[in-house]
Structures are given as structure tokens and as C-alpha cells.
Image (cartoon, rainbow, N blue to C red; front, side, top):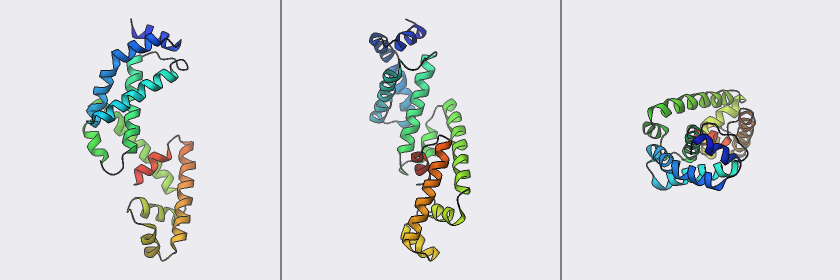
Length: 186
């Protein structure tokens, strides 16, 4: 059965077509994710989530190129997993394991996203921006920031709350999640 035929059947909610797609692509998607993470459990979860979403959305979305769709879905699940990583692993370490074609796409998307984030941070009010950067980039505690700037801890907290609220509103307009933003600055 061709991928195009499977796409049509998936759109109609055919369970057998889904099973065929699963059998045909599970290992390929796992290997693709594993090249990036080199962690079997994480990769299994990523691929499982791709198939869960395929089943949930299969009748709602028209898929024309099944393999490209699944690889892209896996790529985005990998990006979500990367975003969820804290500072335990640097982005450079992760990108070093990416296939070269994917790495170029990700690096371009990452640069574009960072530029949008930086523009939003630069648009913050001056004091708000200063406190936000001390907190997220220099990793100073609220108390350390208060001491450094000779202001109260409550004032620091108020500025951070304001900064996150403004950034969240700005970035939601750009369809960039606050989770990515906070991960970027942590």
C-alpha cells in the first residue's frame, strides 16, 4: 500500500492503515530521534507521542507526504524535548549530533527565534530589562539583584513579574511559547 493510500485511509480513521504506518515508520523515526538524543527511553517517548498525535489528528488534517510529515513531527517533538532540558546539556552538544540537513534547519530556526526573543527583551522598560537579564543570563538570585541595584527584593520580584508578563504577551503574538523563552534564559 502506498503512502498516499495510507494518508487517505488515515483521514477516514482506518485503524489498519494506522497500524501499517506505525509498522512502516516506527523504527525509522526512532533512529532519527536517537541520532540526536542517544537516549533510548527519551526517543521511544518522542516517537510514541508522534504516533499518538497522528492518530488523534489523522481525521482532522490532510497529509499529503506521510514520511515528511512524520519526520517533521518527530523534529518538533525533539525540539520540545530539547526545550524542556535545563542547563544540563548545552544546545551545542545536541546540535553536534544532528544530521547535517536537520542541523542547518534547526540552527536557522534557532537564530530566528533567538532574534525575536532578543528584540522582545530589548523592548522591555530599561529597569525591567536590566533585572530580567541579571536574573536569567547572569543567574543572580532576587536577593543578589536587590543588593547589587540597591533596591528591595519585592521590587525585583515586581520587575521580573512584569518582564515575564510583557514577554509572554509579545511572544504569544509571535507564536513562541514562554516555556522556550524561560528555557533560553535559564
